Amino acid sequence: MYIFEFTDKEIRIYNKKKNQLYIETIPPNLIVNNKIYDYLQLVNLLTKILNKYKILNSIFRINIKILIFENMSPSDIYLFKNLFKVISNVSIEIISVYRYFNDKTIFISGDKIYYKNKLLKNIEEGIFTLVGISEDFELVKERLEKKHKIKIFEYENNDTIIYEKV
Image (tube, rainbow, N blue to C red; front, side, top):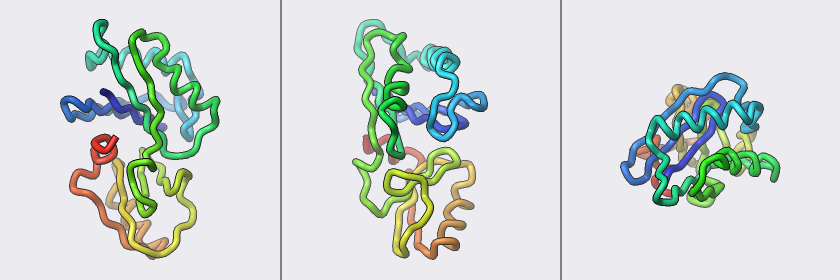
């Protein structure tokens, strides 16, 4: 099983069997604010990535799960599911990460911060867990603690905990 996370700057692919995380940088403006803007180019890029990491297998069905961090329109979900339509023998599932974590979890995906199925704007005081991958993880954590007056904890395996729970 492979778990895909799409951000504005990269595609993260987690191989559940090997417990490996692959990160591929994507050209600008392919995905903006979780919306696909150049569908055909993204499909071509995904095909190259699937070949690069030898994800395609003609004999066995490939299970692909796509992580989402905020509520999406049905048309956005349709586009994400059909990214892999050119490949046969694939089953696609859209997964909301909130299904696997409690209400006191803040997610970071790329350079966006999510809380309760939407971008983080306001948050009540309390103790929260910050989960996800970011180049500026420690800086984001520090800013959140100061701005919202909250206490933040993190997992030891913070960069892969989302993928391991799915």
